[in-house]
Image (cartoon, rainbow, N blue to C red):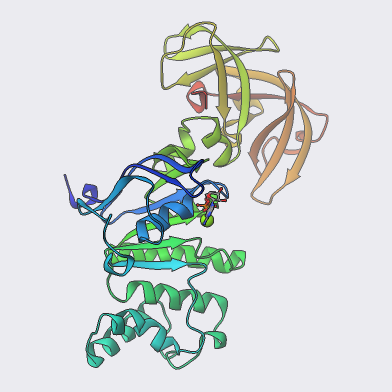
Length: 364
Ligand code: ADP
Ligand code: MG
C-alpha cells in the first residue's frame, strides 16, 4: 500500500453524549488517511463539530477510542496532539499583530526567535500575506483574516489540520476563491485535512473523500464522485445535489436491470447495488442532468411522454419541470438550446434516461 492509504487517525466505535441520554455521535468508525482531504458533510446538528472537538481533545469521547498513528489519544491533552485548528469561534487575537498571531504556536513551542521569524514569514508568503505582518486583524478583510488563521494553523507543520466551517462567514465569491486556495495548499504541502461543512458544493469541490452525516450516524463515506453517482441511501441522494425520487415495487429483472413498477403503472428500469426480491418496495434516484429531452430519448430503455410545466433559465442550462408518470415535479437540466423553442410550458416532449443512471436505493 502506498503512503496515501496509510491510516493517520482512526475512530473506533466512538460514541458521544452530552446529556447522558442521547448519543449525538453514534457507532463512529472512520479512518483518516495520511495526506488526504476528508470532509464531514451533513446538516446542522448532525454531529460534525462534536467529532472534530473530540479529535482535537476539547471534548472527551463517551465510549470507544480515537488513535493517531495507532496510539490512543485518550490521555493526550489538546496542546500535545500537534493538530492545526481553524474553527469559526477560534478567533485571531485582536490586539496582536498578524505576525504575532501566526507566531503564537511557535512561541508556545519555545522555538528560537530566528526560527520563529523564518517560519512566520514563510507561512505568510504561503497564504499570500507577505508584507502585512504588522497589521492588526481589524485592518484586514474577512478573507485575509481567514488566511491568517490558516497560516497560524499550518506554521508549526502539524500532522493534521482540523477546519470547522472556516469559510462560513465569507461571501459566496470569496468563499469559492478560498476553497480553491485551501485545496491548492493541501496539494502543495501534502498535509492531512479533516474539514467540516454543511455545504455540499464545498465538500464536493475540495475533498478526496466525503463522510456524510445525519443524526450522529455516518450515512456513506466515499469520493465525491461515488457519493454523487452512487448514493447509498435516500438521505445521501437528497442531501447531495438534486434528486428525482420515484417510489415503486420490484417486479423482476431483465439481466442487469431491476424492473420497477410505479404506483402510476409505469415501468422504470434501474440498477441496484444489491439483490432485490420481487414485490419489495423500491426507492429510485435519478439525477436531473441524466434526463434527456427530445429526439435523443427515442431509443432509451426508459422512455416517457411528458408535459413541460415550467422552464427556468439558468444561463448555461435550463431547469425544466416536467409532468410524467403521474407526477408533476420531475426536474431535468437541459443544456441551453436543447429542443429550442419546443421547451415552453405546455409543450409535449419525449424524455428518457439510461437504466445505469437510475439507482435503486437501500432503505434509510
Ligand atoms: P454540527 O456541527 O453537525 O451542527 P454538533 O456537533 O454541533 O453538530 O451538535 C450535535 C448535537 O449535539 C446537536 O444536537 C447539538 O445541539 C448537541 N450539542 C452540541 N454541543 C453541545 C453541548 N456542549 N452541550 C449539549 N449539547 C450539545
Ligand atoms: Mg458545527
